Image (cartoon, rainbow, N blue to C red):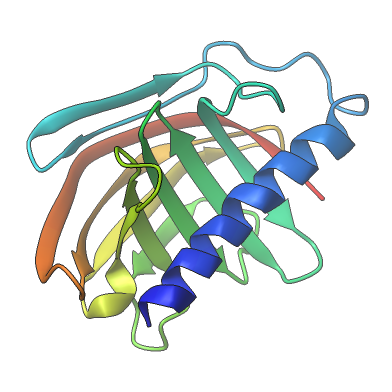
Amino acid sequence: MLLFLKKACFSLVLLVLISACKKESNNPAPNQNVYVKASVDGKSFLTEGTPSPNQMTGGSAIFSQTDNKLYIYGTGTTTLLAITVYGFPKKTGTYALGDADGKNSGTYVDNTNSQDPIFYTTNSGRTGQLVITFFDGKTIKGTFSYTTYNTQKKKEVSVTNGELDVTYSEI
């Protein structure tokens, strides 16, 4: 299970890097005021700015037309918050994370030790929600909170008071 989670998160980061390279010339100038912020177990998490292939910090929302999934992420220097919504209908609404079918998820990755990143996910029986309050095909704004769990470490991490204002693109 842990190996699966590591591969899933690695795939998400790889997807983001590839899409940033592919869409860079087709997108309008990126919104430099984007952010993802939250409290992670009471500690402040904030990432600002649009990421580039050379610097994986910032936040973004990417809709994969191939698998009909919305990926939202905020990447700090040693941590990552990520949200996945299957079958995103491209509109505002409330989306359950850690849902019964295990598709929509919230993830927290502690990469302080880059040789052994620690993955926490709602798919370990924890739940939360994403509320998209604004969507215009270029920007997503909203709030989120979720509780994650790492089965190997037997540790829970709470992500609360989450807010996002990120650039949206499709690949």
